[in-house]
Length: 364
Image 1 (cartoon, helix red, strand yellow):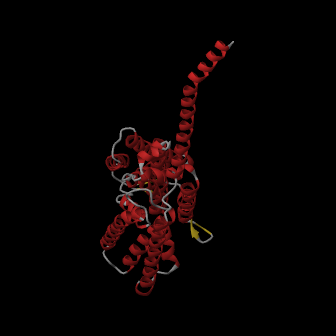
Image 2 (cartoon, rainbow, N blue to C red):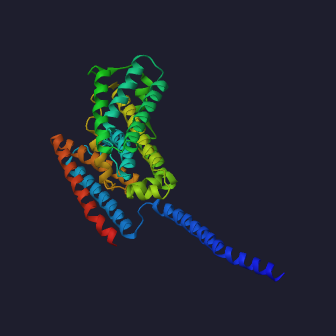
């Protein structure tokens, strides 16, 4: 009997280290899982430090101050600046670039760039014009453009993500491809069509506000809610902050990159449809240089080319600044290139300020 008890005791002593090791391993695994979940939660949040928040507020207030100063100056010096007709024209003109800039904001937040949006705008405009010219139903022509635009955006995203190509190179190449296709489809000429309801919508107003501006407002509201109130939107900030950290935290970075370029493509397609409706014809040269205006508006609005920063409200203010400056100088009979020069100078200044700010916020 004693021998049996000794054997059982030795057996228990022999298993004790093994059981202890298993227990420690399980505890360690749970700790690692918990740490991973915490890291994923933290990395998925936009940059929210107090220094960064104050800086963003200062930038937006500064941008709003510049806009108000320009409004006062042009109201005094530019005849007709505050007339209803001029305000109506400004609202229509900024709608197209504004929609492009919102799409560009998504891409810039992930530390990417999309140079193909201007050419995609022109490509979509030619497609819808050709469809209407061949008596396709308006809804079918519009859907064809939207599906094509999303597909091109997904192609950009796939090449950037799967092939690990730089966004600059991919979208620059797509810019050339789409511009060439647009010229071929349109034979280098404007494409006319007969669709009164389509053009009347672009020329019409609702509650005294141009319909095109209402679409811009809708795009801004939906995009802002998506960026700040959804998990996928917060993931975009995380990817822009540190792609590898976001991947290790369990974020599906590939799906997020595909999403931002698909959104950029979709909004470029919508902008192309609206511009074609406004002009009542398809223009193969439409959208030339618009990608620079969209990027400038997003950056002036606070989006950082280094990633992880940007907002739809800021982008809207950036678009407003560019439009007011361009319109005011035009009314004062300045050469149109003067507005381009000032826009470029502002862009360089804001990027420099962002570059100067980044290490100071990181050190805080």
